[in-house]
Amino acid sequence: METGTVDGPLTRRPSLASSWDADCGALAQRLHLTRADLGARDAHWEELLAPPDTSQDLVVLQRNLNSQDENPCFLYLRCDPGGGEEIVSIGILSSARNMEVYLGEEYCGTSRGKNVCNVLDDSEHEKIILYKNYLKLESSTHACKLKLLSFGERQCVFISKMVVHVRPVSTNSSASSPALGSRIDLERVQTIMESMGSKLSPGAQQLMNMVRFQQQNWIDIRKRD
Image (tube, rainbow, N blue to C red; front, side, top):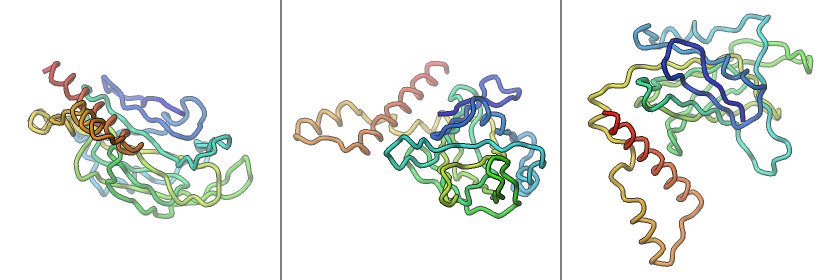
């Protein structure tokens, strides 16, 4: 898994990771931030996701061929919950024609890419089509994941750039909107399930773990306040 942080004036910088393999630090170098005070309106995304310089190398995300699982290509984007900023919208220029965005396991939307340009893959000496995808989230978040889709039979995805628009966290909204599941007693739910002789499915257990993690983050933020 490739992880890294983006350069910029943030005190606590966003992190970007991939479920597929990439050269160390390469993916982070393709992450660009725009902020609310810089006015990244929807119309600006045409310029932000413009075709790359022909001399710029693409980052290659490579599927682990040793894995027996399907192993989709995911990108994980995360702002520090205490860092004061949250994600508003996401754009990516890559060889994946489409992308889906999720908050945890909750589906948020699909972007169907626009053909931008062709570039030459020096390693295989063939042309690669780059697509521009953009999605504005219905509600801002400190973390999300992107599922890259529709890149043919290749065992890799080429990334040119990823642009993320962030804004300051609203104190009022964070105080009035607790984290998902902050009022759910997860231990009691699990105890009731076990007393009935039932076991959680793998998907339900994953959801429980996600809610438990969000609850802990909410408690930590409240303690800082």
